[in-house]
Image (cartoon, rainbow over all chains, first blue to last red; front, side):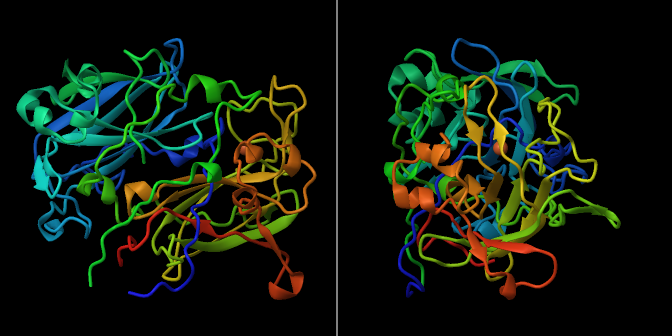
Length: 205
Length: 234
Ligand SMILES: [Fe+3]
């Protein structure tokens, strides 16, 4: 394939600043199982919630942070041509959602338990990708959240394995009871800046 | 013919350096530890192909809240192309835009500055790039505003832009500046990018008035997302 132009350099990032519009959020945006915010949930699989807090240096809440989630469907497929099985992906699972933090730094996503899959890099454990943007954040803080029920798969996951062993638990959400709709809730805090033992590990983009 | 995806690391000189003096959140909210390198698998190389059901486009005229309710300020059109690193158009990208009004105040509960609100200007819009990667908004030129508790740091007139392309690694949040503004050279956010050419690319270009019709002063601004051989067809 030819290149239509000389290579371009990606545009410089900047912060969203303090004034990211509240009106950009609609109820349901944080639900990955809906194809549209006002559509009913249509995904196959076991519903779950991923909740937690975004904290800044000193442990205080990071207010008005925006989180974007992306994950595979219940069978471990992505509805995207870079997944060889994308035509079999669940047409009722959107896979993307956006949430924002409240005055306590809390966020919540409703989704389904993601499926595991295997590709050239090896077996990937069920996981949810999160990106955090917010005032003062000058890029995408990208991390990946794992679930405690898949200890064996987590141990074999090449991305989790790229972290020192002591930091891996920081990316495993913990069971946190049931949500109002009866679905299990998994929770964890994301500390944007802290000491080496507690700061959330982020990945190079 | 399938080419491998390529997401080369960003050249750090072309991206902001933190912390930024006078902007405490750049200290509190950026990790102390360097990010970990990871292998890129499907999960990083994919992303929502088309978000227009979830993030609905349609608000691309910010300057006219309703018929007969024009915003205060210089009417402008901001448009350009969403491209990947190979210069290929990125079709179907969601482009979100937000900005202050002509007096430099945001329609946002946490902007309590003593500058006038314009009842005819909200300043938030969303559109979707077309098959040629083109996007465009009708809006007004935003005013400058001082950054609270920062001494004498004023933000130059700028427009916030968020782009969601068809891959997680293509995500972009940026700010667009206006050519020739004396505050550009003093802005700590724009100047946190070390590379002068990368900084210059954050400044829109004027379109000569003869080239556009109507009441709109034109600015053109291309947005380059990460990725080579990476833009899937829609
Ligand atoms: Fe701003």
